[in-house]
Image 1 (tube, rainbow, N blue to C red):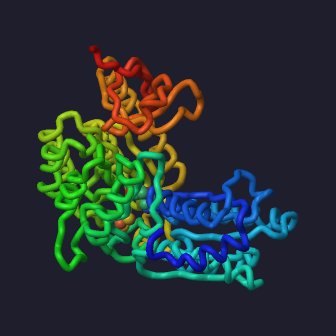
Image 2: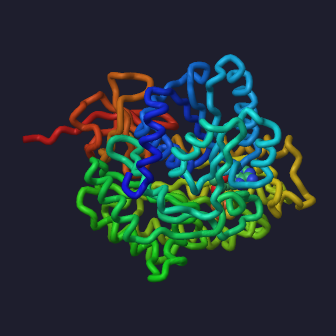
Length: 458
Ligand code: 5AD
Ligand code: SF4
């Protein structure tokens, strides 16, 4: 908590120690990480997390703008809190995250929901203590939005699990893919300095972390805004050199910025997870052009070939969208063909959602919902069938698994991930939590594997 204004933290603690909160998070890992910071701050100020908003003193909603459905959920949730607040008069309602970064959505929330007490954005989480104090003294909504990122937020060190942590390395996005709202919410690209990043990771290691996920909208573009230019591959080498780090993940990558230097890292850095999330969005060159993606399907195949030349068994995942304006049956067949050729271990599939203010929203040839739905189902069938095969290929092999915790559905089991990011369940052994452990894979299904710890023979 270095550099944060501890005076405000102490004052909130005096007023609110023992208060309860419910934190709801929508969206991507960036938001999850921001929520971890919010949680760390609230815990430090003496708040206690609970599940039931009817009983809570503070309800915080961390919002996402990327698809219409996510915004709808948030709006519905804020609306419901109005009724909760009628019964539970002391409830404070705070709304933060990407939706609040955008004036249009923010104004809508402020005008429609006067029962919201605090509104803040993605760049000023560290100011939450001040905002809570201001709101204590006021009947109107406290609004605080910063357009560009503050390194103070990175002083709120937070962990995902005991041994794993997200670390921001780059903020914002300069790409303006024509469907995407993110450049309008999270703003222009800006990189954190390597010194700050390494200092944070070293502090996390001191605190028991051995796995980091480097985060950004487009991590491959890392370093361009720094005075002393550093490439993403160079940063990976620096993180790799930190003693105590066993595994390094990163997300998200843009195919147009995957350099040969980055691909070489997969041959040079054994701690680099055997995994790459490489959003393709579409397998059709016409659609990729209309999306402003700056690569062709052929470029994408070349990248995959190069990666597999360096790490033949690398796990690949992707984001794919169906129903982008103008997508024809042929374009969609090209996407299915690409999926079959690449054979992803995992794919996040989306139905194109119109976002006001983006270029795709004003394209004339929007695809009807029924066609989008049908394509989505066909894509899912294809993706799951391949995923199932990919998981089955691991049956009988031994994988290094980093165990996180007791399984959600069975407390005699624990869960962890392979280096290729596949979920594995194995009989619980407290000694193995947070440690790389060889596991013989004995079975599983489309979404997870089962296994047994391989004990070293004496
Ligand atoms: N509609 C549907 N999916 C979208 N994504 C981004 N914007 C939209 C949109 N307007 C998807 C992309 C991106 C992922 C995070 O969300 O596939 O990679
Ligand atoms: Fe959105 Fe494209 Fe930037 Fe990703 S790279 S955040 S999809 S604009």
